[in-house]
Length: 402
Image (cartoon, rainbow, N blue to C red; front, side, top):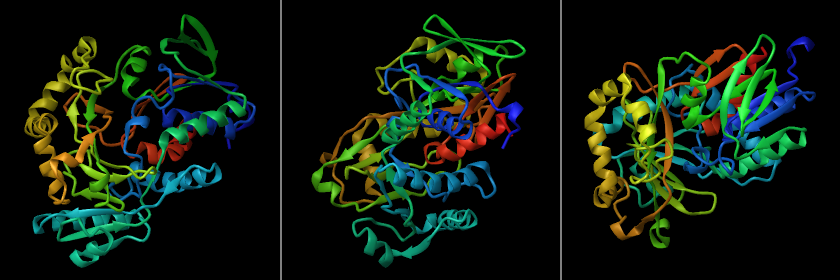
């Protein structure tokens, strides 16, 4: 615990997604005498990444052993399970198969298995074709890893409960309150929102897609820029949904921080297919027709985007093909779920991922923080950020008040 002199009095949290709300709740719980204010630019909580993902609570299979992502995922998944139990939030351990569709993917499957074992993923099993058939009889492949403790949850509901707990501790959650200015003095930070100024001892920004804007308010920029990637989903119709019992994932491409088009049964028993990953044309570009010229110019005119495009244009063309052609999308799903037909894929809402890219065009695949005086900005919070949110909150608060 920090010394009494370092305990905060007033703290602002920018961002009403799951990471921001978890941070606000962590401060309220750890420092009962503090006053926490959450600023959310939208009219609802969890309006962007948190409310548009597949709802998976990851067990920690993929992440490099010893990395921050691995440790926060393992700790965070347990904390989230306990939080849901304590607050009567549905939390379903449906289990997950990571499938090697052909012998050429067995080496990659073995690599994932070693990482998962090093990370302490509980109850992990390697399955042959017969073992796969017992769990997912309609899934095709030569081998798989089974993670029975991988779960699904309603992250929007988690956010609502986190916000309720912040309010119960005396904090505020302000919607429709985009932050438009941040100025610092030696002993305080002034935040401008809705033409009103608010003074705080400390600010923690968890702004996701809008973290560039918050970072820019602090003056000189860093080496990162947010590039939005849209993840497009379909939903299986009633008949096809019966083909899937839990979660089914392909072998991901290790060059990218995306896990590939997968099948996810939700807490409400809907089965979602996706997401892919295509560059969005706006920070909130949930459809191809959602275009914001200012957003586009912000990242396309930046030198790092040219490096990104030069390195990954082939993958971009492939993802674009799956985006514009439902036939192409379906063919990729049929690789491990052959019985799916085109008519089984129904429209579903897309999500947009805030992907940090550095000036050399590299996709940043771990947490990145920027601290300027009394302001700490989360510049990158990659998947599994929702899974890890409660552990991330601990980590961030420890960064400010060790």
